[in-house]
Image 1 (cartoon, helix red, strand yellow):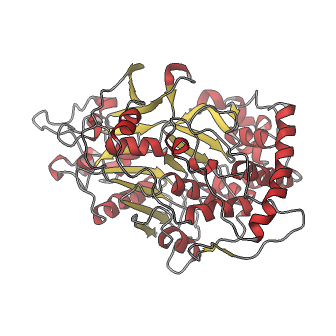
Image 2: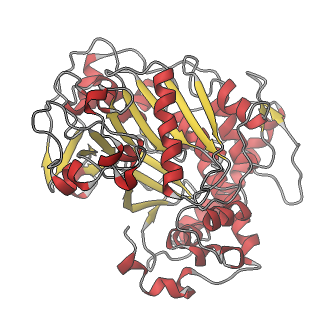
Image 3: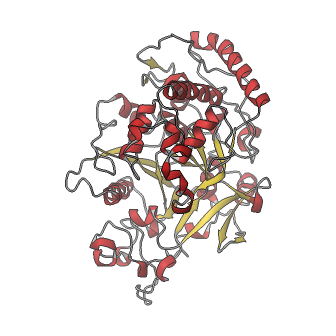
Length: 505
């Protein structure tokens, strides 16, 4: 990030403060550009130049709560003015602008996507013959995820999903207890479930997972939670013709790709021809580290995942369901043994007489099991034209205490995190801190770009006037305060010396 860009960012920050005082006083909600050209353009560039987000001045205190002017939903305290403005927009009632099917638009959209198999680009032939969009069902684990990520997810997918299912556990992967956020009667549940933030016709369900058996069962505890998602989909009416989208709460598919998966004649989603041999559609997600202004352009995250209902265990025909003996640990909820996968065993354990290959349970769904195809957007600004089809809002948080708790108690725990600097804990966090603090990132694991510098598609939430810069400035303030007590970086951590050889990207 060069000096001129940093100066520009500072000047823009002052403009944001000045221009946003009047809108806050009169309770104006932030708005998006809403022209048809902007919403349907192949690439959404940003951010817009004007702002309705206000940054608090030094020493100013915020109210304990806030209410939107449209639906009287109370906003959570202590999520920052940028987070509150984003959440207001997510809660705003608005039309679903791209619901109608226009053959010329859909044809152009379908032509943007292709698969990449065995390092060979294979462009698919699409026919726009559907008169109705496929139904998509979203399922995700949820925990201490920031409203910055949840709000962006809701805005990106507004009005698309037939139903949304969340599962929340009272423990982390390491067995550490955590307080449930989304139980009946809480403000957090009211916002997530009752506000219609995912659309006026999209019901949202939350199951609280409280399992006190072997609390240290790690990944199996997570798979038990994911299995509940499929049960919730079934209760919500999913059929073999529908599509399940499995995510974590900080991941989402781009809206354009969601619409493509609803209308394009994709072989993986055709119930008449799909035999579940290669059932999973994997998206290639662009990663944002903590801030919209810290997009890691040299990295893609291979989630979320989609599978046709016909191939999902609990939705498809039970005649093609694997039993416990055919799965790891002799556990019906675990992932497949190698002989029942395409990647590791070419399905050598599966009867050749069966016309359909094994159904996918929740563990198969998330892990690299069976067969899959990775879907990219065909773009001209990247090598091999491999554009992204999703977003990963990684390490979004409101306080560094929340971030340290995550790294101490979730997957691959960093036990010493409480006494470490943010940069020292993980190379991804080192990238984030250097990006936010305006330092050189040339020696870090990934290169970064701001949304203003990036040519391609960005989250719709980041088109919110002034939001991206406001979040970035708030995060800078949080990290500066934290660095007064912690000043070591990832490069001071002994683990960094062999990290790149032992840890996958």
